Amino acid sequence: MNEIKARLIKSRRYLEMAHHDQEDGFFEGAVSHAYYAMFHAAKAFLELNDKSPRTHKGVILQLGQYVKLGKLSKDEIRSITHGLTARVKCDYDVEVIIDEGEVSELLNEAEHFIDKIDSLVKGAY
Image 1 (cartoon, rainbow, N blue to C red):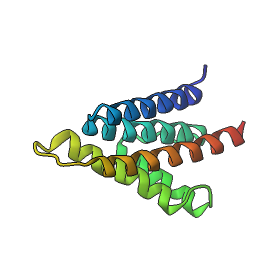
Image 2: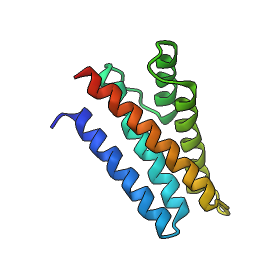
Image 3: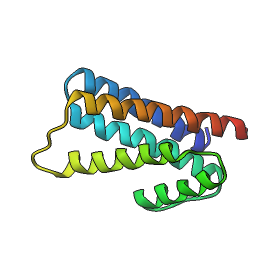
Image 4: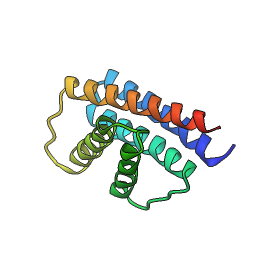
C-alpha cells in the first residue's frame, strides 16, 4: 500500500478514535484525535502533490496555496487551523475547559475536511 493511501486510512482511524473518545467523555482526547485525523489527510494530499512540509504549521501554510487554485476553501483551512489550536490547548494547558458542543463542532469540521481530501485524492487516481 502506498503512503498516501496509508495516511488516508490512518486519518479515518483517528477520526473513529475521536468519536469514541467523545462518546466516553474524553473530550481532550477527542480533540487531539480529530486534529491528527485532519493532519494525516492533509499530509496525504500534500504528498500526492509532491509537498512534504516538516511542521504542523508548514502543512497548513502549504494547504493555503490550494485555496488560490480552487481545490480547498478558506473554511477548510480554518478547520484544520482550529483543530491545531484546540489540540495544542488540550495537550499543553493544565486547566482545559472544553465542552461537548465544542468537540462536536470540531469533529464535524474534521469529517468534512477528510471527506474533501478523500475526494481530491481519489480524483487524482
